[in-house]
Image (cartoon, rainbow, N blue to C red; front, side):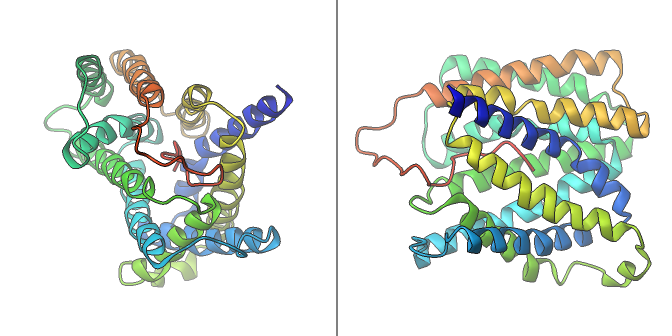
Length: 306
């Protein structure tokens, strides 16, 4: 019980940190590609130092195939961040975060399309509920191009996150810290052609926010998450994950005065409830008899963070 309590505190703190990420992105004053580039750079340094100190590079278990899968997942992850940060600028942190949490539904859909997993009638029903919630929470009108663009960016980020999860699920026997390290390191050369480094000279205090994104929201946050995952059942992980959007909406209101309207607010519990039902349903599904059991230090199937 003490171990689970510690895991609860670790994951709660990690989700609280996730909820403040939007403020760091906005306050940095940098464009999304530059923000993600330096998040990858500082994050790789943080995770590299931590992994080295913990001796994770010894017997790492990374084969060429697993490394390639981690790199592919990393490419999807970094562009997922780019789209999410674009959504912050186009709409608000609150709206982008809620829409971004449609990730589980895309994971179910891709599981059906790619892995030929059958979608049960109950899951299909919850997907309809989630879509209704998405329509309500978007609150956009046909002529509101900025909000429509923001909605599109957030959905694109959710799609890329789900695809990355499908790829990462295939990596077993490797500590998740090393998988994350490969992913953020992949982002450094990948984003070089897209980032406009001419803007960094005038960032000033923005450098502190960029460093925080890498060191705190990538290094510290990921270490807390992965430590918690080993101590908690999937049901509790799924519930605690919603600390992230709750904190994001609260911070967006406190710092920028942004809040969703009454009609939009009606859609939030629909998405939250449907997401919980789908996530917990996946966790409760029995594993195939032929599937080998993954070791305790294997990468989690899905991480609910950014």
